[in-house]
Length: 431
Image 1: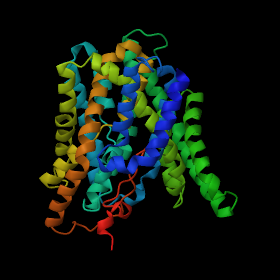
Image 2 (image 1 turned 180 degrees about the vertical axis):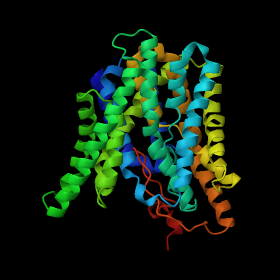
Image 3 (image 1 turned 180 degrees about the horizontal axis):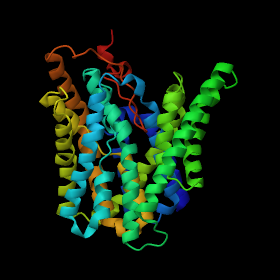
Image 4 (image 1 turned 120 degrees about the horizontal axis):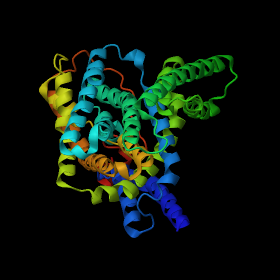
């Protein structure tokens, strides 16, 4: 039975490579397709309930490591000074408010959660995923500063939210009296150790790689593999000394991006390709494991929370953080809406399920419902709303301050869509 599942999954991956561009033109993104296939596998009985969780947990953990590392390393922090106040507002004001609002709403809707599980829901659903809004961040009609703002926010908020999620999981485990529960105090110490180890590993790795390039001792063909190993090194080294590996991976990415020089972003390509591959498997696991749990707990309050999480809980903090930032109402609404919940949120849910077991079922159901609704709502609305906002922005005149170079958005298994690709023009339109 397991061999049959492997055959189906590998065949699906190859099929996606063949027809992904066609499906995405119909707004069928990789998360939609692979989540649906995972749910179908669970429905057919080929996989059942949370039983495959133990085998998929290493994949989930490695996925989060690569996502945190590449998201942090890819951002050109030295080039973001012109709009630094907007980034600080979204990450320093908007993100904490989103966590607090999400936690308060979860505590109100689901009092049985207690403090820690409610915090888990609020923190796990705070990070955004620009990969689910590729038509937004790659559409040149959307002003470059707004595309950069959305990309930078999604690149950093998952790493910032990770410590809160880890603390919430540790607190929930201690509150439930689970074996080997360390409690939030020990978890906080692990976070500090992980941050120090990760920053040291990333800085040293970036500096050594840049030195090796200058001296001609490193080949370009192997540089990407070296960076991939560096991300795993930061994670495993932190675990070896009692630190948190996920925070280490994020801090290592930040340090590597700062110290690796101009060639650093190009050498992340291999890490992003690998994370794109495993992210497809995580979306499939999401459909197979958490969607059935969601359906078992599909209470009206769960759906209501998902809707409010994607609207009020996200958009109100963005509006509050944008006061005085020089953004008009349409832009604030646009940025607020395009905060899709994606890979980071479902990885947090799977990690919570692995650490807490049935204790976290209903909290995982809330996270799963929100992510699933986001995949559909943002997946289908990204292209038309980006085009509409782009037309409105063009009618308002040139972009204030001039355009800025936009760092590439993470693909994570999603082809970077372009507007009207030439090889898909109909034969009639060809000269």
